[in-house]
Image (cartoon, rainbow, N blue to C red):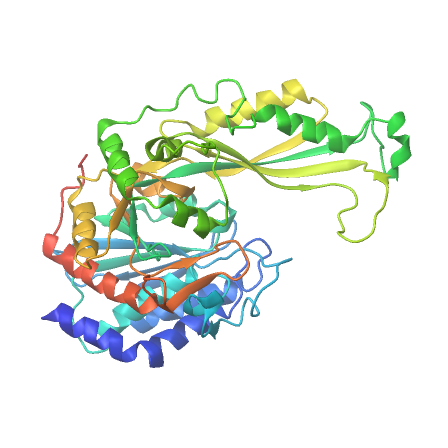
Length: 483
């Protein structure tokens, strides 16, 4: 059988061929925030598609960083998968790493948990992307036919909010509308080896706020001595006061009207919530994200897991960073800063609308701090899939066959621009595969090669991908309009 032969080839080639290819890809920085290594990585991505034998390979320019496009269409009667991913990563400064962040080194016993590959981008998402390419390569090198067709769209601005990706989708509508589903590669096992499948993700809107001294008060052009705070107002305090009015201590957003379009949970999603509540390991979840407690934790009371999961269907507001005055950890410098700055984001859920939420935030800032300067940056809406879709069911069947526990999440905690494919083409998005990694956007981002915790490694991801697309091929084409 094809699948058995394919899996055997992956196992034989992983250490010698696949792993070095993944390391080479990770060793090229591709920081979209600064542009470092972006063009080189785009070219490297295009060469990987060329090696696969893809046609119509293009490094498509946008108003920002390019999108890499290619096609592997061999049999129009087979399902066509749109492989969507990104080749850009987050910055690494200032962070303390166990190994240099772009050396992609193997650590034999990472924090006592097992053999791991440590690198920026190893899970988010260059590692899964190149591992996926190696999976296909293992089959194609021997002249075997793929069970499905592929389109590739790999962007370089996901970490910036996929600013120009919708322009690419609009430009390539004719090519992309051939897709029957989207696949986004990721290592989806928890630390202890439970498999997570997500049925959607929240949208996101970024915004920035500047508070500068001026006619309203505050130092106009330079920091002044902190003792003068007896007489002079502070841009820093003004910014803190503004932000504190946006959110209650329990996390509830206080911006008027922010919840008015939030959709109530459907019966289908509530069933998923109920089932997940029976399986989720709260202590493992906390350990994975390095926290001691959640908002809903109360002393002497057992956490209501259903209520916790339902929070995914509510928006959340985050201060991503604040800069003002003297920020060195050592020593002191007593100043009253002349300016303050904050980066913020809000995660939005069904059926919140991007422009409506932007308008509400804008009105709030103008009302409570007319002296503030602010900028509403790019963002995108939420996406949602039905658990009943045949391709989702195929994914559940394949991952269930591993014997590991499956946890189906009605929404992901994070965001991705999946709405583009649903709004434009009305097709489902499959996100995942075996393997575990963690610490995206953080120091010591890692993915297991072999774990002591029960989780799979990168080779397990490749094997699960081979099984998934063999199953999708068996499932065949599915009518796109499906609940």
